[in-house]
Image 1 (cartoon, rainbow, N blue to C red):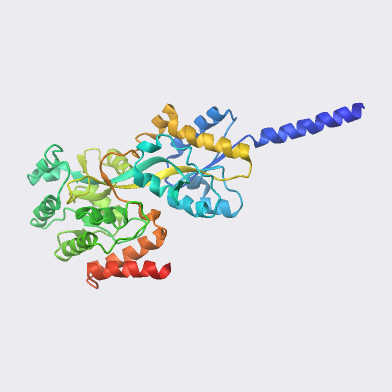
Image 2: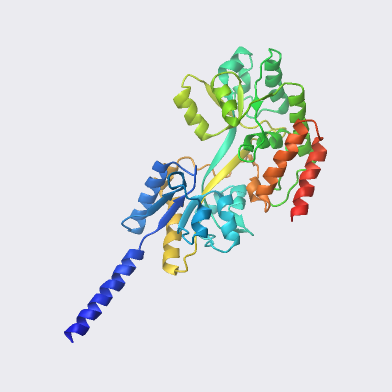
Length: 386
C-alpha cells in the first residue's frame, strides 16, 4: 500500500512538474521590429502580468534565426512581434490565432493599419506601432535660399507640388542638388514610392490594399514627374540610401525623402548641430500623406486552449497597459485625418508588386519606357502571375 501511495505521489509530482514546465511562453522579435532593450522590457511586463517566472525571448538580430526558419523547424513561438508581411504567410496557412476580439481601441485605429494586419477582413495581428516616413529638411540651407517660410506650419501645413518644385529649382540654379534618390530596390524604395504617390494623389493601391491601380492617371503623372526631374538634372543620384542620408546629414543636400525615427536618432548622435525639420510628403490635395510600416504581435496556435488564451491575453495586455504604452512610445496607429498610403505588402502579390515596380521605374528613369507603358507592364505582370 505504501509503495502504491509513493508511486501515486511520484506520478502526481511528475505530472505537476510537467504542467509547471509548460507554464511559459516564447516570444520571437524579428529584426528591426524593436530594440533589444524594448523587447526585454515588454517581455518582463508580460511575464509579470501572466505570473510566469520568465518568458523566453528569441531575437532574430542576435540569434540569427528568422521566424520562417523557426516555423519550418516546428519551433514556432507562442507570440511573434514582426511585420504583417512576415506573418501573413502563416495566417494563410491557418497557423495563427484570430485576434478580432483582442485589439484594444479598434475603432480608433486607422483603417489602413487594420487592413494590413487582416486577412479576408479578420485581424491576424494586433498592431503595436507604426513607423512613418517623412521628408526631412535642413532648415539652415532653406534659410540661405530665403525659403524657410515654407517650414511655417501655419501658412504651409503641407507643401504643394509647386512649393517642392521651388525648392528643387532654387538649388539647381546654384548647380547643387536639393534632393537625391538612390538605385531602386524593394528593400529601400519606400520613400521614393511615397513621394511618387503623394505628389499628384495617385496611390498605387486601393484603400484596403487589395486592388492594384498603378495605371491611374495621377499615379502615372507622379512617375513622369520624377523622370522629368532626373532627366533635367534637378534631382541627383546617390549610390545607396546610406550615401544619400550621409549627404543630407553632412549638409550637402537640403532634403531627404525617407526620414524615419531611426534616422532622427542617428542625426542626434552623429550630427547634433544639424537643424532638421520634418514635413509631410508634398501633396496636390493639400492633405498630409502618411507612408507607414507596422510592427505588430501575432499568436501561433499551439493546439492547447490554455496556452493560446495565455498568449492572447499577453497580446491584449501590450495594447492596453499604460507602462507598456510608455515603453512602446508614440504608437502612431491612430486615425488623424491624413491620407494614409496603403502598404504594398497588404496586396496579395505584395512582394512581386514591389519588385516589378522597381523594375518598371528603373526603365522609366533610364528613358526606356514612358510612365504609362511602365505601369501597364506592372499590371500585366501581376495579372499573368495570378
